[in-house]
Length: 376
Image (cartoon, rainbow, N blue to C red; front, side):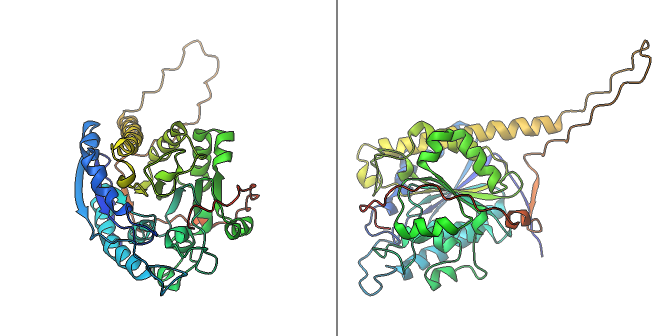
């Protein structure tokens, strides 16, 4: 039985997923609390949002795991996903925009699975310095955090692929990698033959962040169907408050521009923030940077949805009276389609089958060399 969901454009539901189980070292599990303490909810309220804080899942920590060297701590990762998924479902059903504070990148599996309770084929824009396309067969470290995208598209450890009963969680043409600056050789080989869309940091710098973001939106049909926005803070160049920072990557301004484009899309269905580590941020300047980015983009979203709602509600202008001196009747211009209301209902009956249509695989761009410091 289909469930009709009415979006509440002024409401945000914050969910904490304090886990570092998929990482090799602890720290990420402290991110949700630190972002709250830095004033995230108050900042969102200050720009007009009604914020519901739905609390945190149980804390799960990275632990040594010599028994599963190809996919470390996989049982703890599954435990974190099973805790988060039903809470995402509830948040989506409420009509609020879920804002999930991680934690490591594995939260993406639970977020998409929770969304698929109501939508058949959501897309994903995956902002991350790393492609996260390793598998237990290719990983140099056993770090599940470096395999997240593989598991989203149905490759990798059987336990995580089966987390969603009908894999893949996201079809390859419906997923965009955005801001990648580190690739391992097996990841490069996979991308060379995959329809999965990707924008390396170098591509974005050449195109411009806003232009690349708009193109990414079009490529996964995000103007017509729901999508999840994954934001790993290590994509920011020289951002120290994360486990594996890098000198290259996207500038703060480029990230800001891209987030604004992505978050002003009407079909944005959930936002994930991953990989912030407050242990590496003693003065909370990193937390404030992340919050500033979110608040700027969500303020732009509120204004965009407000303008669309006002335009939809405005009465149509009456037709102009014909001129008495006109020898012939004027040709009528084609009427514009009415804009979609920001509060329109979502229905599980709607699917984006067009995202699965045959598309030419883009030529694989030249990839940067693998970075040994990141445990893919």
